[in-house]
Length: 304
Image 1: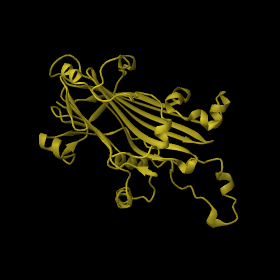
Image 2: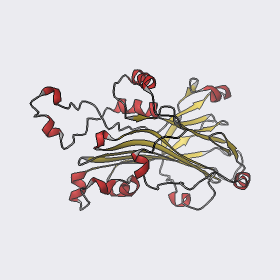
Image 3: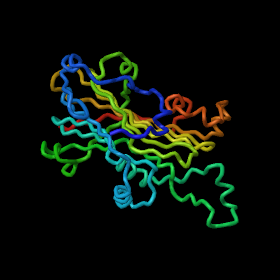
């Protein structure tokens, strides 16, 4: 199934991009001890898969609204799309989906971004024409993935109902992005849009998950990007990396790095950067220009 190209697809940059990837070769899979499976790959004890579903239809929108207890959703929600990483030996399940992300948007409940036109809206003579900004219409989420440990193999196959949460501990370790840039075969790659909103043509807001699997390990980037033209830019990146290591049967080592950046257009202009929104179309190029609001790295405590 194919979908119309969304604006974020036309403007997103090349961070971790593998646009030219057309599938692994049989030789690459064999050399890595990997196996291609529907929607993904099985390698070094991990089962890594992605799924792309359509934009929610009206019936599905109603279900989402009921679950979230809201009448507000992004313009495009890919409610059936997801990325999952499972390690059956330890019961580890990492999952990335729109519903859980929007649950955390609802819980965080940030105040709405005041756009430049908002000051004028307040003084309209006709109350019915006034725009009421009483919720976070940017759908900013602190979501960094859904995780659980399955209590048994049956649970691993059937769902998350009989699971307990995973434990993440702060660490001084860092994801080696230089090592990740080394050239090696790509066993699996995909980018999955979870939701997107063009903010009534006043900017862009989207959440995507990109996963790349190599013989040495896997890497996932979950990115929330927001640009409200003339007001604010916000980037929330979650990077996860697992190095397979060389020892057979060794417990997986998974690092998770959270980095949130944000700045107003006024603050960027004061630093000498352009004030034109067109200069900030690609979040990968904008990222290092935005000041860091929060950054930390965590290590997954692998179940015994």
